[in-house]
Length: 272
Image 1: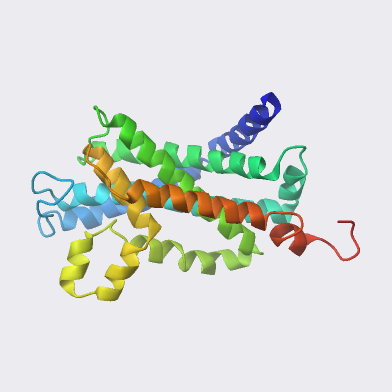
Image 2: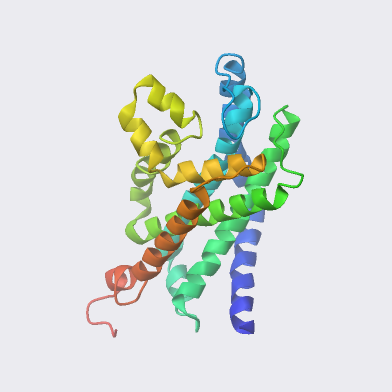
């Protein structure tokens, strides 16, 4: 157990040190959601007010509504970026070296997942601070703080596990951009990050409404949104945790040396 925990810390520390040397990475991670908050949400602040629906007890401006969705955007993009890092490490041979460590392969992948979640949460915290400076304050601190932390950690792990699963199937960096366009944007725009589900149903966008209902990112955003106000998130925790377990199990299966990553990268005639 001591050896496993040291390996976990070593992998997390490596990612933190690498992130600390990439000064533009934090800036680029914050620019996208802050543009939505400072430009898009500000422009529609008084146009798209949200009615009194759960978890809100009163009418709220649009920027307050989309703030949890923008936190989810930070977690989503960093989770997907982690899959890019995995593909890069695999092409450079670093991933093969890491997977030959004398530890269970699922534990090594779990360590990578924890490192991704730590970076995601750090970037999300930075976004919340900057958003507060811009005038959009989220009720993070209070009796609901443990619920908020639990929702954020579970969401970060789920999206990191999804990125881990994608890294199994992305064989080259050149294919990454196309794959991300078919994952990130549909997950984000077909969710409740920008508009409530009842708005979609009311507008007659039935197919978008149905996709949003089955989108796990919707439940990640809703869990964080309800947790901020200390309300019951319903099925959201079960969907998020269930998706996390399924994605991680499939990723572990894909990185098995006899299947997925191992079978695809094994040279002809090489020993099993």
